[in-house]
Structures are given as structure tokens and as C-alpha cells.
Image (tube, rainbow, N blue to C red):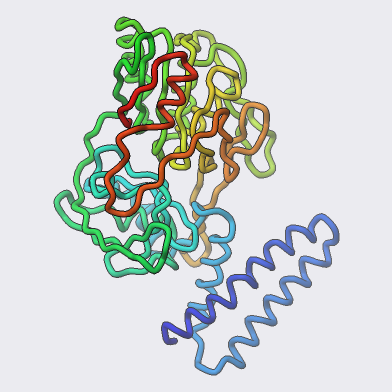
Length: 391
């Protein structure tokens, strides 16, 4: 089947399968007979394609395309995986050490959530919201987040070429990045103004809570009585580590609620000894704040331990697991999502800022601004003189 044929069939079959899924779920509530009717429609469409389409159709590809579309219609992190991809997961092979520092989501193409501080992607000026149209000559339109993240990895020193656009799809830019072992620290700190400590958390992993605890202790010794925690462009990482980080700042209360299909909601609460850091806090966030950083911010804001200054976060607080199918392929499916402390959905909803401040727009190739309005607003809220230096 030609590439054009495959695209046409995928375009046609994807919404049909999505319709079948939604129809089946709704009809389970209203009428058991409706499920069979929707499946009959899908069977009819499948038979019509196989018997009437102008070219000979590879029905296996049609079905795989339909399953791709079905998973893609759920959320950006769910994906249908081929037999070879499932074998990669089951083999337990670790990803290559070389990385460019990007975290991705899907919005028609692959889209950048954030570029890690000091990474090749950040040095090249790639930003939250940029679209990645092509990775090494392979279009991302039919590429899952799972595939895209792996396509960016490789041996240190090797190169990967991206076609990226910001804003207008008619103005693409080709960028070549050299993979490297990322070595920037998880957290750094400084005194931003008299009595105000600034803590930049660039990544959240298993060791991050201990690093942050030590950094805050140093800030207090240096005279900090208030704290600004910057988790803008902090993406990926461990959800559990995000909750562990929140425990440093929240002494009592609900940190998050974990929800899965067919099970009772699990309320995650503080423990004895939590909340050792009691300084007043401003959290800086943007649309690149996700995963562990988003859970961390949600826990502090939900317990009135911090104000959220900046932009609405992306809403990416869930975990996936592999469900293997009989033919060896699989579904990488979101099975757990997190809610805020008051029970509001966080995944795919995000957090609204307490104090909205937009990040400045930067044209492709333009130097970043020398001022930081989000940080300045946080300093103002903390009662300190505004800083002119961008974070």
C-alpha cells in the first residue's frame, strides 16, 4: 500500500475507532445493546475498506493505524507499540547515555514541553511550545511521544537533526544537536534580594529532595527568611520524587490524590517529620512545568504553603504501564492519574497561577530578554526590591 493510501486510510479509520471507543463507553452507561451496535459499525467500515477501496489494502497496516489513532485519542503519553518496541521494553535495555535535554508531548506534531537547563537543546534556543516536525528525516506526525523521546537518544557525541517551528508552521528551522551526557545539577540557589532566597530546581529525581534540603539550609544561613522556588521548564522526572520534595515544605495535610480505574481513590498525606522547611514561598511556574514539578507545586499551593506565580501549568501528572496484546504488540497506557489535594483533576488540566504573569515571547534566533517579569513579580510579592536579571 502506498504512503498516500496509508495516510488516507489512517485519516479515515482513526476517527471511526475513536468514535467506537467513546460510543462503547457511553453505551455501557445507557444500554448494553449499544456496545454491539458500535462494534458492528466498525466491522462494517473495515469490510467496506477491504472490499471497496480503489487500491489493494494491507489490512494489517490498516488495523495498526487504527490502533495508533485509538491510543493517540486518549492522551499524549498513551501509545500503541509494535512487537519490536514491546521487545525493547521487555529486554530491559537502558536508553543510550547521550541526550539533547528535551521532554516532549503531542499536539498534532511532537511538541516541546521543556528543554533542560544547560542541555544542547537549551543552548540552541529551543523553548517550551516549539513544534518538532521532523527528527532525522522522519516526520513526527505519526510518531508517539514514546518513539520521539527514544529517537532523540543516542551515543554521546552523535548528532540528531530536528526540523522545528515556533508559531508559524510555514517558517521551519533545521537544527542539529550533538548528544551528550547531561550533567547540570538538579538544583542551584542564590540570594536574590535581601532576605529572599532563590532556588532553581531544574530536574526532579530521587536525590533532588536531599539536594534541595541542603541548598535551603545554606540559603537560611546566608540570611534568607523567604524563598522563591523556580520550577519553570522543569519537566519529566519522577512523580514520587515530586511528592517527596513536597514533604519538605508541607507539615500536615493531603499532598495529592491518586486515581486508577476500578479502584478507590488513594489519598497521599504527610507523615511525621514532614514540613521541616517553614519559610514563606513563591513558586514560579509556566507551561513547561510538568510531572514531578507539577505535583510538587500542586501540593504546596493546595495546602496554602505557596503562591503560584507565572503561567498555567501543562497538566501532565499520570503514569503509564505496558499492556501486552496477544500478537506481541502492546498498549503503553495511562492507568494512574493524580488529582490536587482538594480532588480537582491535575492531569490534562494543570494548575492555574495565583498571580498570572506571562513569559515574554521570543522570536526564533532572538536573544532571551535581560529581565524576568515572573521573578520580578515574585520578588514584589515577597516584599523585596525587583531584580533586573533574568533567571
